[in-house]
Image (tube, rainbow, N blue to C red; front, side):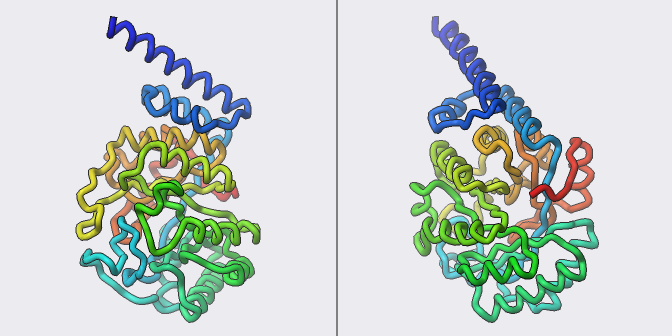
Length: 335
């Protein structure tokens, strides 16, 4: 009787996945209770359905970006996962803001390796006025001289700064929400969810694309993950990084267990059901995926950060181009 019940329950869940997939393809926006029903769905069916949704709304479009870590460590924020926080002893190589010449050199090095989008990423709550001037000048010259698409991740920013970035040609601004509003206070206490949302609102008001996602494996529930996906949809975010926690020794989450590949694929698939036309991006922790992310790309992901991350290694741009081509994706600028 028990086995018979399980069998019919699995059949019902599989039917539900297919029904929701077809509804989504026909324009239905998933509700929270719909997304919660997918948590226990058979992963193969869920991933396949998510990939169909990706194909329907995004075709084979693929977005690739690369990072320049413009300054490292010395951050006064207490984000529990971050090796760069001065609250924790993580033994990283700290350095202040790079010179304009070094910023341009590293950006050009990525361009020469094949990258067409470069993101400048700065540690800290926000950049100082002097730092912003240096970064702005370097970005302006890099855009003009190399024709590169530019993104920035400078923490909390004001309206004037974002307007100046738009004027020099920056077309995307990153600001991760990290998790649900409910769980955020468990991750960070030195700045708030609303401060992040304010920066995102400034970015949107200037017509610049927003990149915002989360980090998974911090102890959040699947409901928290779904709440984040729904918030990002409500904000109209089209670039959503999926970061897998790499537990760094010295941080409060150093003993957290790394998420299984199955769980990563389930997160991506449910995010795709909710954020149908977004670029869902493999970001930090991708090296934990033994096939460089192939299963994840077949579960609804269609973007990645290539090359090294901020404080951890990544996958080379050349290897990524080969992998992307093998999977039938086409790298380009679609938003």
